[in-house]
Image (tube, rainbow, N blue to C red; front, side):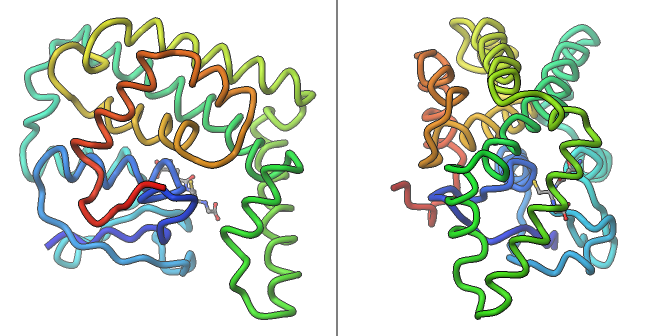
Length: 238
Ligand SMILES: N[C@@H](CCC(=O)N[C@@H](CS)C(=O)NCC(=O)O)C(=O)O
């Protein structure tokens, strides 16, 4: 049995970590049985980040590497039929989302004042005092350092928003009038796109990037369609 270790649900989503939501969506899309373990024990994660899985004693970390592992072990019903060009297209979209757009979202949640209010309350609000004062401060300092290391954190807020909006606009063009990112059938890139778009569109935080995404009717309809099809049944939208 696959055990999925991920953060507890937050912000009205099955998971406020897009990487965790991506992996849970993939498991559901591929029809693989799994059980959830909600955790904050980062020291138990093989790479110090969530999500990771334990598959009958085999620990695998990193959402992308987990998906590769699952494809290898259980078959690849979603992406198996893709040709090399479609796979390359999907890889380019995933990199745009995970290695670029993600960092703009991280900035809006952890550094921009309005986002930080939401994040501090949502992630740390139930901690007892004085942990409630110390833990968020330490965590935010870590995220600030990561944003600086990546480079995104070195830009002005308007520049970060312009970069994120360009990504969202590109995604809207790439999706176009299709039902899914590679056509009429869902593939694993839809787990990636939905996890990140839902974490922009379906979270109660108004940002210029969310406004841009909400302005693309195809992205909104896509996200809602994927949520209806694949979000866990016990998830109740706000
Ligand atoms: N490349 C990793 C990224 C995972 C990741 O960045 N997880 C974040 C949450 S979205 C995390 O665990 N952060 C906690 C930390 O860095 O301490 C994947 O695809 O799983």
